[in-house]
Amino acid sequence: MIHETILTTMNTEGDVHIAPFGITVGEDSLVIAPFRPSHTLDNILDNPHAVINYTDDVQVFAGCLTHRRHWETRPAVEVPGVILCQALAHTEVRVTKINDDKQRPHLHCKPVYDEMHAPFQGFNRAQGAVIEAAILISRLEILPLEDVENEIAYLSTAVEKTAGPKELKAWEWLMEYLEEFKAHPGESSQFGSMK
Image 1 (cartoon, rainbow, N blue to C red):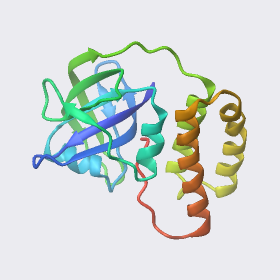
Image 2: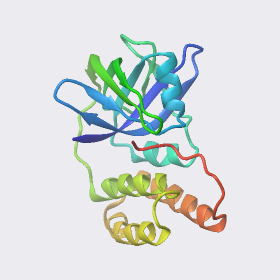
Image 3: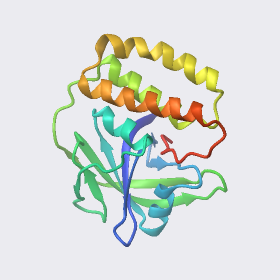
Image 4: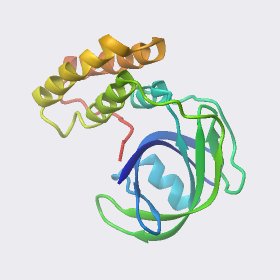
């Protein structure tokens, strides 16, 4: 099972990186599998810890993918790292094993601290649509553009019918980024990763 989260990592110099990340939940560990190159991977190799943040604020997902990474954080409790202030809950982890790979290493992690901060009151359809669109946007360079646009057209109905102000802003950021990508095809981009 993969949970869509916000992962915060920090290198030994204190540089924080915030990224949307799909965390694989296994029977005995949590697995982080970043594609190379990755700031997340660089930070974890330097400081083998991370904080998995669970949030319903989809602006963070969309913001990180559209170069809006300056979200408020506070120090983690048990690991050298930070907690996203929008987190409803978080899990602090330590890397226990690395299955190296040239393209996508798998970092097996052990939870060392969990905390709930606020109740989760459920997702509306627009929040789910924004997260799905963010995943698509993160893969613009590897998926056919027509497929991405078709999926986004389908998702837009949920946004139109159920979005609040945060979801509308997040959707706007993603759509602006998509239009920028289409206006400059073939240019390298610096997307965050959802996986």
